[in-house]
Image (cartoon, rainbow, N blue to C red; front, top):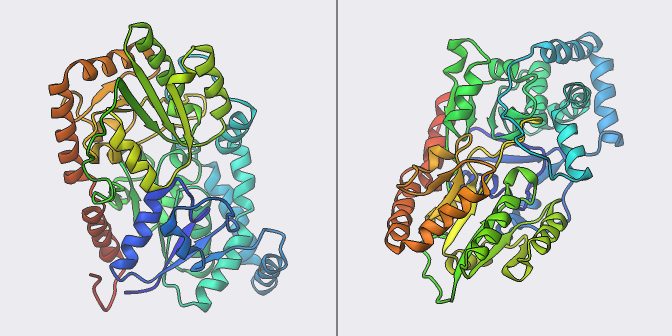
Length: 440
């Protein structure tokens, strides 16, 4: 198999288990992947299986590091007009303004300063242009690396800056590229996306709703290169869990503690259920900028004793919590002002794989995973009463909860099995990247 560079903004990332699973799965299938991270190595917590990949990953120097400046100087001294042309290319490409999918905010924001700053930085068009210009040194540096190592194709994960770098490397040195689009990277800033799609060999995205949106940005013939490939979960790791005996109702959620995950609405629903006399508790897994706010909100609602914040945990502990829960709920919302949203949260599929009845919001790509009333329950976003009603419905009807749990497992076996989906991804890669040998 031809050698591919797999380019990330950062790798590995603790909560991005889908990218980790993809890399490990492709490597097991014989793909020769050169892992590259634009950001320096993280010193934070990692999943155990990610640790061995750290030493296999090339971490780019910081933008003002001598190696980066030297590569940029070589580019401008060897081919000054072509290098300057890349500056114009970025600007011309940025001026093309595609539409953006966004919903209404529907209420006051709970974001703190850190979240607001992050959302603004990721969604502001002018800042996106300036940061895109800053990708030029990375393109010069990585073009030299790829040529030295015989890289024949670059695949970028996330449609923002990694794909910008891949697009510039192609323009600079002719190395073809492709990219995978996920969620915030296409819904918060759509600039540059039309040209990225046109100049890529192919595009992969994790939901039909994303593919439909991306297809509106280019001509019909160009949209044929856009392929849907669901992330997938490890169905052996997230097998049907044997439920622990416990009193009362245990609800679980998991995700980055940010406003768009809607966990504050779940806390409201837990308080409503408690007021109705239901003995309910809630496990919240994950970390993020809203943890202090959520802990304070739980206290204000009088449910602190019912809610446990676990922070980030590894897969083994996570599987144990799935086994202890009765219901999994993730009431995601769309931040209309910024476009930030879940598309299909992986944790919903993981919970479904364990046989848990799940509740999700009827936004974006979630209905592609959950058929309401069949293999899960869909509720309107930002509706705490509706969420409480859905939880109470499952709690009060053991037969319904069991049927939904069984159907949920069947659904993920059909569409969210990582092994099956990696075979499909391999077929997509192989159809565009010619090779003298086939992958397994």
